[in-house]
Image (cartoon, rainbow, N blue to C red):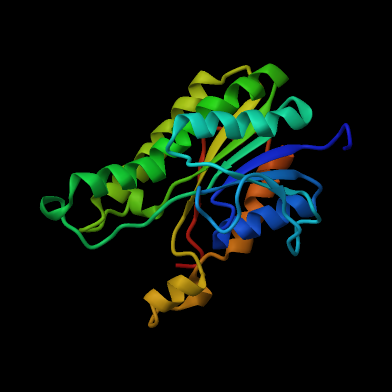
Length: 238
C-alpha cells in the first residue's frame, strides 16, 4: 500500500455510471470501496478482480439506508489509510408514473430513503474522517428532474431536490475545512436501459457515463479548486 494511495467510497458503483466512475478512479490509482446491497451476488468484503479496476476495488456489503451499515462501511474504508479522500454518492432509484394521490407511503419512503437519506448518512459518517484528515471531496448526484418537474415523479423530484439543498448546506458547514461538496445534475444518461425505455430517443444527444466519470475524476483530483457548492448540469446536447 502506497503512502500516497487515495481512498474513495463510491455508492451505486455497480450501475452504468458507477461502473464508469469506478473504472476511471481505479485507473488513476485510487482504491475504491463499493457498497453492495445485502443479498447480492457477493457476500461480505472482498477484493474485486474485475476488468478495469486493477485490483483496487473492495466491495462491502451494506444497506445504505441503514445507519449501522453505513457506519461500518466508512470505518472499513477509513481503516486502510486512516482517511477517506472522496465520497461519490451515485446510488439511486427511479420511480415514475404514479400521481401523488395514488402513491403509497411505503413507495414514497423507499424513494426518499434510497435517493436522499443514503446521501445524508454517507456524508454524516464519512465527514469525521475527512475533517480529521484536513480535506476531502464529496460529489453527490441530483437530476434534471429536480428542476424540470414531471407529473408522476413527485417522490423522485423531491428527493433529488433535497440532494441539491443538502449539498448547499454542506458547503456552508464545511467552510475552512478543506472539504469541497458539489453535485452533478445529469439529464438523460445514455445506457442500455434508457435506450430500451426510450426507443425513439436520440442517444447522440444524451450524456455518456464516461463523461460523468471524467467530471467526477477531475473534481476528485482537486484541479477545479474554485468549484464548491456547485450544481454541475450535464444535459448532453439536448
